Amino acid sequence: MMHEFVTYSDGTLVVSSDIRKKENGEEYIIVCFERPREGGFDTIIFELPSYEIIKQDGNYTEKEIAMFKSVVERGAAYFFEVAGKGGVQSA
Image (tube, rainbow, N blue to C red; front, side, top):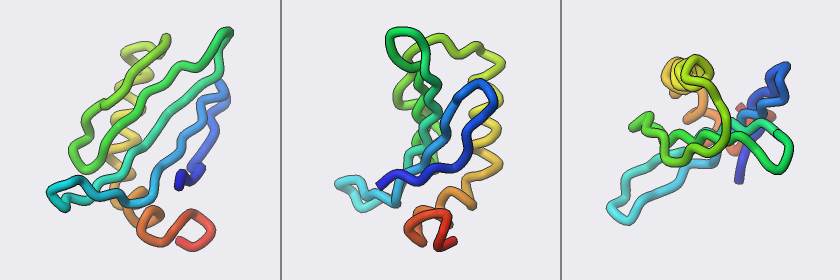
C-alpha cells in the first residue's frame, strides 16, 4: 500500500510504501515523487534505507532531484514509522 505524504505547489505528489521485504529478508520502503506533465508524469523513486534512485523518468532538474534526496534522507525515520503503522492517520 502507498501512503500520501505531501503535494508540492508544482503538483509533485510524494507517497511512500508499506515496509517490504527482499528475498534475503532485508526490509525496505520506497518513496515516490511524481508530477503530472503533458503526456505522462515526471517520476523519481527512491529505495530506503539505501537512498538509491531505483527509477527516474521525466524532466526533474538536478536541483529538484537533490532536494528530493534531502527530503528522503532527513525524513527516513518518519517514512519508516508511517510504513510500520500503516499510514499517516495511524502514525
